[in-house]
Amino acid sequence: LYSRNNSELKNLNKIHKLCLPFTTIFSLKTYKEIKQIILEKKIDIVHVHNTLNLVSPSVYYAALSCKIPVVQTIHNFRLLCPAATFYREDRKGIGKICEMCVSKGLNSAVKHKCYRGSRMATLASASTLKIHRLLGTYKFLNYICLTEFNRDKLLQLNSDKKQVIDPNKIFIKPNFVEIDTQCIPYEQRKNQFVYAGRLDKLKGIRLLLEAWTEIDDSNLIICGTGPEEQWCKNYINENRLLNVKMLGFVTNTEVKKIIGESKALILPTQWYEGFPMTIVESLSSGTPVIGSNIGNVGSVIEDGVTGIKFKFDSVESLRSSIKKLTDMVSSSRYHYQLNYISDINYK
Picture (cartoon, rainbow, N blue to C red):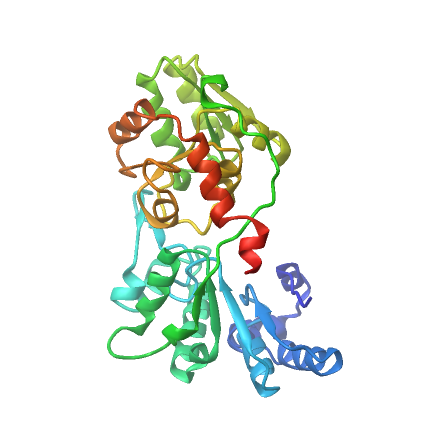
């Protein structure tokens, strides 16, 4: 295992901080250390998860110089979007899906200070992408994408007749969880739906609570904390949503228990997401997912089999999906066993 932590940035002297935009593009320290590990440990393959900021793409060159193959797992959209999210807020603070870096170039991200609200940090991230695209760095790598949606997005790099990535080196392998739980039959479940995640506009928590203003025959359990927590509490009080309960921080074990006894998990996300593990955990207990019809959430859910997809920005569409939910316990569990257990993953 080789890892770097951004906490190192606090201890850098002025000269090293000035050099950071350049070491983000290529870190000589990482190059030397990775190469040493490969030679000493006789490494056969290098598997990379994240290179920004301190590791840098130099990890690829260290492996390639030793003629060792590299696998890069794609957890987000960093290779196309310097902020990695395909999402930004406008001047009024209204968030929306944004793919300007794909259609108009990486300068769009710099203009809008998309990475951490800093033009300099965004420039460093965008420059890394631009330089390594020109060098052909990404063409030599093998890729693991977690979903078909991620693969399709990654291949958008090969526009304008330029092959930045070799399509034959992209493989789809979703994440997995190993959970051996007993599925509670649909008719024996509590009359409740559950939201588990960060309380954030990005996650669609406002849309969810707006939908619940006209749902009075089922309870909503909210697990999580975040910047929208106070807004949620105020909204629940102002609208007298007596069938909504906020639990705050809940341990992963307790969240799984709540999901397992609920009718459905609700994921009203407003962006593409990475690969939400809550979906797999939910399906493992036979609990279907009501989710937004965009990005990875939309691509993972099978309508009528593992849940229901709704129009991501429509309160009415979400309400309708909640009301038409039927028993999908067996099909959800079967889909999990077919796709998301360890044996399948290893194969």
